[in-house]
Length: 262
Image (cartoon, rainbow, N blue to C red; front, side, top):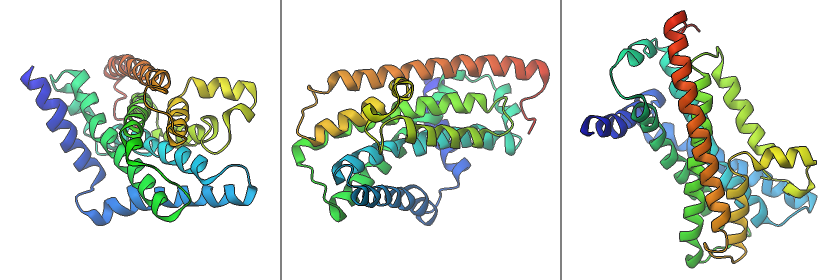
C-alpha cells in the first residue's frame, strides 16, 4: 500500500514536472494561464457582437471547458512523451501497479485544470460583465473539480490510445475541439441538432457547464447535485474504459513489440 501511494503521488508529480518542463513560471503562465484567458475574451466578444447570450453564458462555458486543456492534452503528452523519449518500455517493465501508476499522473492535471478554470473566472470577473458572490464560490468550485476529473478521465482514454496510435496529439486536438463543439460551451445545447445534443450528453463538461451556469444564476449546490453526480459518473465510466484499454494495449504492445513504435 505504501509503495502504491508513493507511485501515485510522487511518481505523478515527477512525471508532470519532467514531461512538461514547467520548472519555471515563464513556461507555465503563458501556456496554462495566458492562452485560456484569450479564449474566454474571444468568445465573449463574439457573443456580444452576435447578441446571442450575455457575458455570463460565455464565461461559464469557456472557463469550465478550459479544464479539458490540462486533462486531455496533459494525458496525451504523458504517453506521447514517454514514447518520444523511448522511456515507455522501461516504464511498462517496472513491477509498479498500473492503476496508481497512471492515475497518479492524472492528479496533477486535475489540479492544473482547476487552477486554469479559476484563473479564467477571476480575470472574467475583473474585465467583463460577470459577477459572482462569495456564497456561490464553494458550489462553483465543486462543479469545476468534477468537470476537471471527468475531462482528465477522457484524457486517460486518449492517453491509452497513445499506446497504439502513432499521432496521439492529433487525437487530443480532435477531442478538445469536439468538446468545444458538442458540449454547449458557446452555443445553447438545445439549439444543436438532436444527434449532436445526444453525443454531448455522453461527454464530460456538458453537465458541468450546465451546473455552473445554474449556480451563476443563483442556484445552490443542492439544486444542481444531480448534474454534478452525472458528471462524476461520466468521469468514472471513462476512467474505467481507459484502464481497460491501457491493460489491453500493454499486453498487445508486449506481444507485438510496438510500445515505442512512432
